[in-house]
Image 1 (cartoon, rainbow, N blue to C red):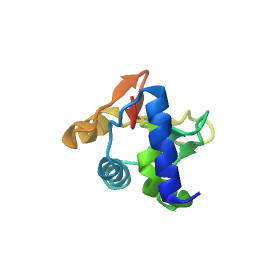
Image 2: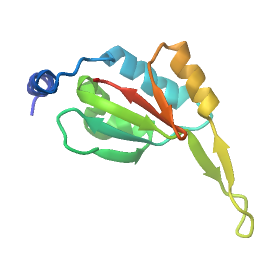
Image 3: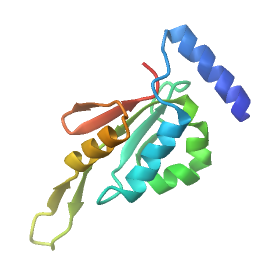
Length: 130
């Protein structure tokens, strides 16, 4: 499917579902770059395209997103991204891993770039369409 065909299908799906775009392609790119360069680690995320029934990718990292089928070239089709800004740091076999929570850093980035989000139980959802 070409980018133009995907864009047309996305617009038709949004109209059918009564949804409006909340994020521009430029904002998605700003988010991707910030996750790669401004976070203490690249948080995993789950992604859903508007034209898909279920999420197409889970626990991806932001570099993969750039490489993965030109994902952010098709950012206009992203319905939502759910980011989990936590990771574990292994401290040894007998010691429980350290949990590193970068939620405050993520919130700072989202506010800095005026990216609307919702947070629930430590998972941050950025909608492309609502």
